[in-house]
Length: 337
Image 1 (cartoon, one colour):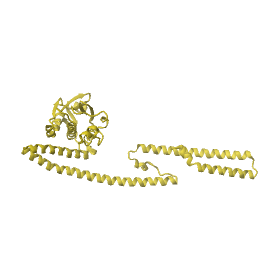
Image 2 (cartoon, one colour; image 1 turned 90 degrees about the vertical axis):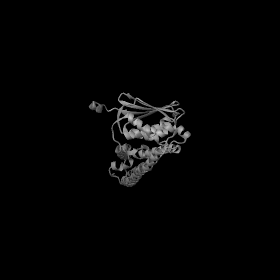
Image 3 (cartoon, one colour; image 1 turned 60 degrees about the vertical axis):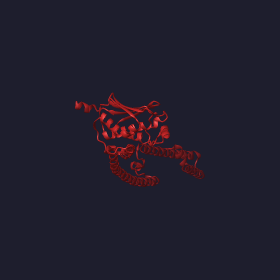
Image 4 (cartoon, helix red, strand yellow; image 1 turned 120 degrees about the vertical axis):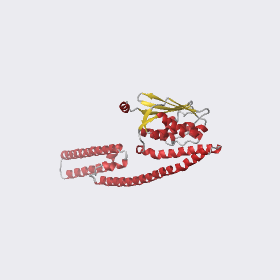
């Protein structure tokens, strides 16, 4: 609470007290009281008035500081009236009931928005599941009828599948805990499946992939980790160079299994590195290539945070290396051994 502003607001009251003192002093002089007795009365008046006002100021300041601390700790700050007691002062009660009305209105508005979001999310998920059927049918038709144009069509169908998967995972990324299943999985199998998901993209762009030393077992959700790997491979190919290659390998470092996805692409500028995981950020390379959405790495970061997977990125003009870090569950390993 601003002390200067508080005392400034009290200025009319102080002026009123001063006028009262002057009026009383003139009256006491008129009826024959001595100057000493009048000064004594004024001194007592000032002392009592100052004591009461300072006490009221300290009490009011303490209440306001406490309220501000509550407000800072609240995640949903519109709920501050729930932590407030009904004030005793009449003017404070007016503001309190205004806050309660605003809180009620906000809660009703949030409820409507949450309901609309849930309906929209349900529609998106249903649409994606429905669209997968014709995409799969077209894939089968192209694979069973090998012609030059069907190979090109398969690349586009693979791209369409990636976009639909990205939309689905984006819709579910807010509440991944309702969709994932953590169990022991073989890292090599996930890597091979991710490569198979992008086989037409890799073939069309003449990408060489080297996989080595990934025969580790990790505890995570296979579907979500596979999606993250897909995004990393797609992102790498998007910023490829001639004679482009991707090296995928893993190492055990202390209590973590680290999976490396390393490429020799154009790299990321030092200015863009701190922001690569921000939603919608495309950076210098994205503006040059004009085909970036800024969603891929953002989704990877968001899902990794939800799954407890470390995600780091190192880049220079010689290429980019993305590192996924999986925690080793020592307790489960001890039980199994």
